[in-house]
Length: 284
Image 1 (cartoon, one colour):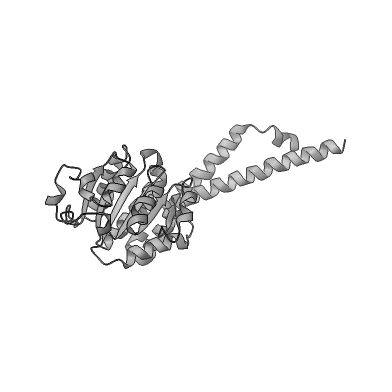
Image 2 (image 1 turned 180 degrees about the vertical axis):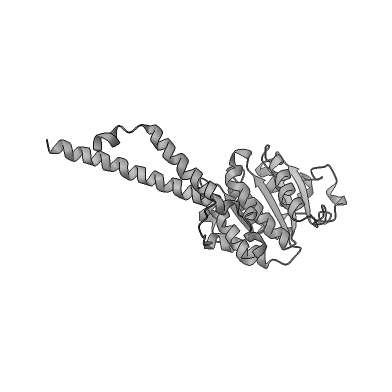
């Protein structure tokens, strides 16, 4: 048996991983999620904001991270939309512009058609100035964004005509993969002006955000797990979001769980084979 496992064709391992991921997907099996404090703090802050509060979304990630970050982006937008907060969308990533448009189209336009552009949400588009954009927006918002993505002056749009600086906002939501991202928004927005900041991050970046809690950051949604927890909190408060189409992250947790269990099992098995061989050699 030891020799069989020692020379096991790696293609069997690839097949096992395929089954670990594919079976839960096709079975549509989900597991209950319990929101953690880092997620609930963000949820409760948005939930208790007065309707019409101003929320800036800075979607600073590329399509390569969409699988990890899109579910939390959509969940946060749904929450703000159902609370009738005013949403401002921007990106500091050159390839983030299509993601702005797809999130607005897929969530706001399809799910909340009653919301009006310019009254309830606005697409500010991409700014290439990186952290300089955040610094300048702190005192002169329109210097960095004089127009929206369609080149309409912000002075002519109802929800932006009186917007002067970051201090006019009630919350900044930064969803990012690196630079510029969580760190820059904390340093140049929360630090100097005290604007509340909530973060969404990839699993790799999330540990870098935790030291900022709870003083500089309200909370952190970490990768698909954080998104699943937020979807759970949203569904508990608003039953309409219990439908499968609103729970993308929750449905992705099952294949991730089984894949991780398989990896752990293989690590244990590999170490078991190693130590068994050592004992066998010592017995000779």
